[in-house]
Length: 356
Image 1 (spheres, rainbow, N blue to C red):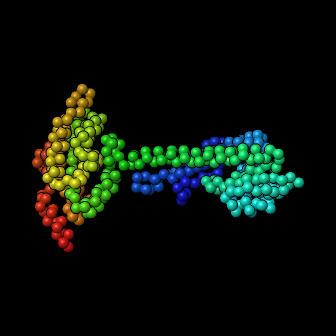
Image 2: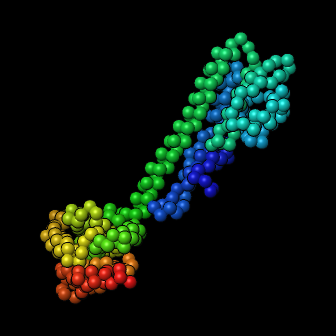
Image 3: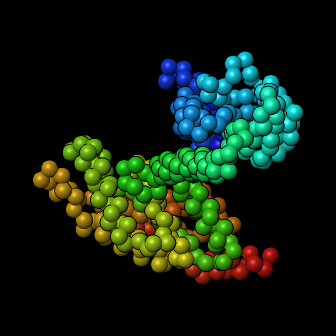
């Protein structure tokens, strides 16, 4: 399946092998990679019932044919033994003309009777819809009804396609959300962060605005899990994420890096300001309380702060923030450490790079 969607006529194994029209759509993840197909089916038997009802009510013959003239769908009253348009009495002479046009109105003679046939190619199915009727006094009135019916038919097909596309889009949005967010805390996961930081680095190279990263890790978090269980640990993580989300800016990016480590990307934020933000987060987490089964659980965090340097990659920026985090841990935890890199050095490096 190479196109965005395709329509097939096949046996429905889940519906007693009934011949079914399947409308299938391709589904992609956040990074545009193909992950599966979703579709809906419309029983051909149901379409045949509609054809027979219309034939009896309006004295018309309704059938479908493919681009080569093979009759693909018809009612039970259609003449037996006929499988091609070229075998329909009187229609053979104009079958090539019909198949050469997307739609049209034609006439042919059969057994001394004039028949009028209207055709329309339905691109989604790759079939022609043909409706013919013998000429008579009421032809004009029935012809108008025919046009209405054709319009309804097309409207139904369009409606089915729109509803299918809407359903697929809804499922795809949900899949994308699951693929880019951490299930427990609801913040971005590492895969999404990899994409967002690349976009941020491109912006920094273009504008020269500062960019900083905070690496945050819980202090002695294993004690929480060992003493109260993993459910308590999950609640602590969720509450801490709420505390941090309330204090960072809308433009900042918060991501769960792994386990009890989180990474915050601060756009338009130099090292000193990023360090102040780290202290705000550290103090806010220390002051917060998570309630679990009547107990008050408190935790602290340590943070490492690093600022983007010209020529940095995502890995090198994160690595320096992680190195600063280890120094903070070595200071006794519940501590923030910045990399040894001043605003003045950053500006000098940027200026030298610009001169080169």
